[in-house]
Length: 278
Image (cartoon, rainbow, N blue to C red):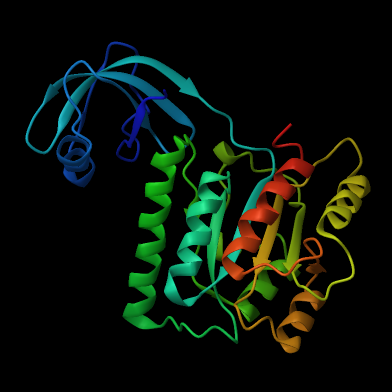
């Protein structure tokens, strides 16, 4: 059985070495001690969020924190191709279920999409609370899946904002700049944007293979963006706007999937096609 996993504070694992002592407190420490019943002598994984994993042994437990000795460190490289899920907002936490599954299945980032036909609307304070809820879901799924890389949660985006980002790949878009530790290329990034649409004629796999063939052996895709619309579907106006910006409507098999299912299913296929699941 794998070790229980907990999140280190940002930068906490940057300068540690085997034998170092690290403390986990705050909400994470309280969760570990009170909910997960961590005890002295137990071996755990501490996840740094930027690829570093520390295997540690707990040496002391307090009421809301624990201290552990670092046994070993592993630095996991970022995937060569970042796969981003753009998930339309949905009722009944269906968008959160999609985000949770996508994190467990290896997504690199998620972006909340305020599509035209979304019943849920984010604005002002509600947008901040909604994004915070997505971030909490990501953190929980990272620990569940024992991931050393923690996916980022992009800014809530309209269709117009997404189209603007796809039209100019040099712009950071809703995720901001990609750091060098994430495998950022100094060249113009190769970004493939795919809109999952039940009426599309081209299969997702065919479009990804065509894009890879066009790059040749010297380069790979830097990013694959998967856009999943709301239960009410993507409007024709939105589809045309995204297509004009360079996004490709694609189909995911013969069956029509729910909004909360389509993204995780497409993610697994896309990661396999770019060689991330070989």
